[in-house]
Image (cartoon, rainbow, N blue to C red; front, side, top):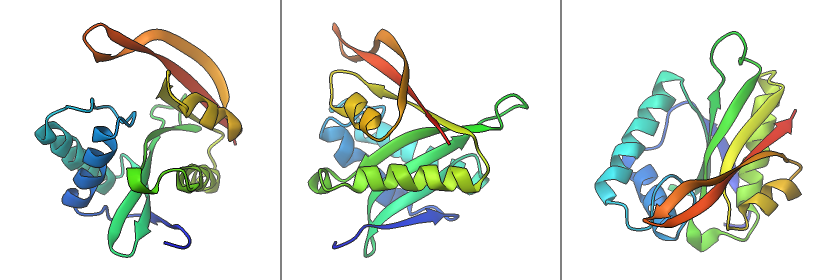
Length: 170
């Protein structure tokens, strides 16, 4: 793929495509809510739920497509309630492991921020796993670290990572 094709999807991709991507990212150690050895059925169930949330409008989905193949995603979860309608959470930024390191994760993140601005939002927030390059990735893209929750994430019994919280003013 010469240039990433990023698009806002009103209709989500087939569950199987999202499941394949999520499984590949999880198996490669990606910080997308699963362990590397999580049962495939759990990841499929999560993919089914995400597709349903996009269909219902609970989540906005931007995808990175290589022809017919889904190779990246980022989801926006709008704030709920009268005190949080000015913001959204960025969740599950994923790029196929074979395509990482080419700038497509950053392009997806930038597209999500641009979409949030078009919606009139004032801020985005996200959390990420410590002990990886991810906190530095977000900081380099202009996100402000607003807190760290020590040992909040358990990767395996006895193996913990900090959870880093970031905010982006729009």
